[in-house]
Image 1 (cartoon, rainbow, N blue to C red):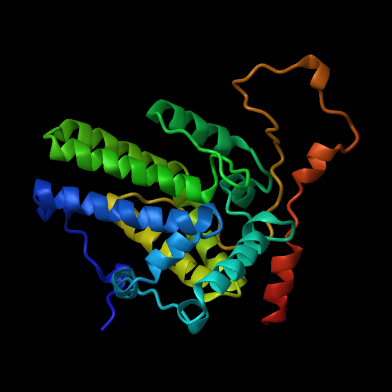
Image 2: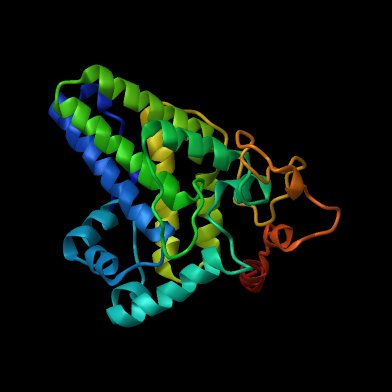
Amino acid sequence: MTTTLDEIENTETELSSDELVAECKARANIYRLLSGAFLEEPTLDYLNAIRSPTVMASLKEMGVNFGEDFTATPIEKLQDELACEFAVLFVVAGGCPAVESVRLLGRYQQQPCFEIRDIYRKAGFKVSAARFAVFEDQLGVQLAFLAEMLDRAALALATGDEHGYMLITKEIKRFWALHPGKWVRGYATLLARATDYSFYREMAKLLGSFAQWELDLLGVKVDDLDGGKLKVPKAEIEYEYDPKEPVCNTCEKTDGEDDEEALKKIDISLIQARLEGRK
């Protein structure tokens, strides 16, 4: 019988300090697994790790059931195919970018991006360069941040710093309430419908169930503002720069549409065509 995340009860109050340390580390591992799926195209090492018997068994217990397109495809071919699917879903025009600003406000680099940037700065968390440009409010980055915070929580407990553990847990709750809790569950449902490959479909399903499980575990109640909708209306108020940064008067926006503005338009044609073809 498969045990899904939804069926696992929250027993945090019954756990010892050592058990809480182990739980924090286990949760951090799931965050990193998901971050690896959504931050950049999967590497051979990442795919080999997931296809190992131990990880596959653990994922199956969480309700993840990959198809033969993932389990039986030669690893080099699988990497190439998933790299193309990653580009279609998250990078090229016509996809569904895994970015909070896009999902909630219909534009890149909006207020959530700058709020999260400030949270990272205060926590000493730095976004490293990847093959593709990433924003602070990108899904994989948010998940990596939460994994790091859980590692810090585990370390605090392991060293007897219960107060530090509580402070970090409070920050994790706050981050969920202000950012990923508002959009990742709905986005996960869209991604599961949009992808052609069982890898991203199952990772999306795991993302949705794990997000809800984490919110329940943390006792955080927040509405899903994303809703899995395909088209997101553009925000009436546009943030083209960090409000805390000085602005050069010679760089004022013109009435005409420039190249930078054109890049901010969200094209969903590829994903829209896929979804319409499945009706």
